[in-house]
Amino acid sequence: MSGHTSKTADAAGVKFTRSQLLTVNALLCAIIIIFIIFPAIGPVKLAVLPIIAVIISAEVVGLKNGIFSGLFFGVISLISSFASPTILSPAFHNPLVSVLPRVFIGITVYFSALGFRKLFPKLNPIFSYAVGSAVGVITNTTLVLGMILLLHFGKTFTFGDSAIVIGWKWLTAIILSNSLIELATCTIITPPIVLALEKFLKKAK
Image (tube, rainbow, N blue to C red; front, side):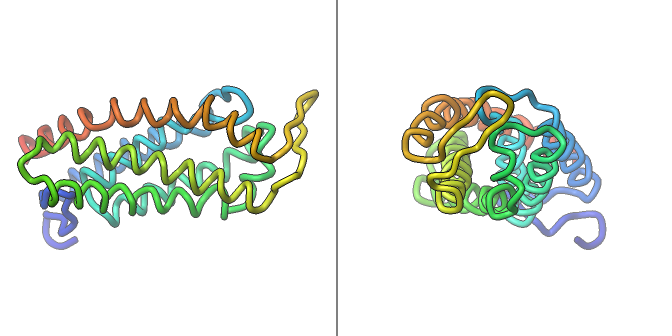
């Protein structure tokens, strides 16, 4: 950054002031922190709130901010695995599961939204943001579940009286119970939020 204006732009090339960036990042970080107390649904936590925050960060502010938000999400996810344990928490103790995949969310969201907008410049921007949102959720699902399968395939995790075996049956259950909900929620909810936030920030200049 230099002066009062950030040099980081969103997919539309819009630049924001330093104070706007601080405000947006504070809000997004607060949303991500809520993840640490987000109630568990089934064997894992639905990561809708922090995923939405990372998507907004990448689409509204830009690539570097998206990467930062993803990293912050990953660190909070790692902390949450210790502070608010679930049956899969031992898997998330490994940063390759809890942190690294989250960093890639911001990267894939930014480039997919930007690429779609360049391919179809006449379409309403909401479509490019929807594509970016969907890609972000798919990135999170693929990398997190993929790393768990890679590192723990065949292992049994227990928590109280519950137990699960990491395998294809478990993967199918997670996708049907969690991942599809996250995909639908983020793709529908996030684009209007991004457009509204961009409009608000432009007027606030």
